Length: 278
Image 1 (cartoon, rainbow, N blue to C red):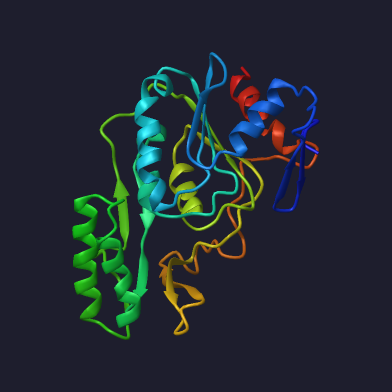
Image 2 (image 1 turned 90 degrees about the vertical axis):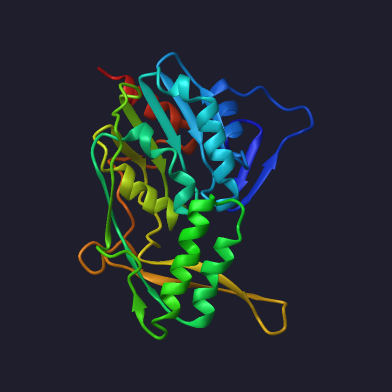
């Protein structure tokens, strides 16, 4: 039970609609946030702003960018910031790009991948190049990557020369000063890639439970079966972090482990009180 009106059983949720009981504001805020199907923002106290991002799917990039832009003044004038990505299973790395300047304190290093080049695998780059959720600059990159991959069929290909990308921003924001990212075992793929970038900031602490650990073999692609009734999902790349910093089968550990005595609906309050503690 979550409060007096909500029952969760596995992936199913039930709500008491007939004569509901009165729940606490904490429970109502949790239900409102966790049931959101798109990015959700709220200032939850004088010292803390909160954003819920249920997915980094490329179809949500514009919505994520938009909600951050609309609330940037609040975020940049409030000491604490909670980023709730619980059960965010991933999507596109480009979907979290607008979050990085908010948490930035020092250069962010990202280790690249090797793509296995085949005609079918490489077609994904063309699919991405035609996706209007991405910028023209990104679409140009995908077309160039497609051409490069096709010159080395049957091989693992490193698209970026160094294999390491270093992102630097010109400004370290005064606020937010403290950032809590709420995580759990429903986080994988791009969500874990975001965490690898975010945890390099001295402002950031991860709070929750260990993530799923599904990042080293990445870049999912979906193709139709010949009968057109099924789709096959499989990965196209492997990380250059292997074997020295493997994530698969291990996951990413939180800085603050939230044990079973702290129910899910109290995680937001725990993060808020932890950051407010002097």
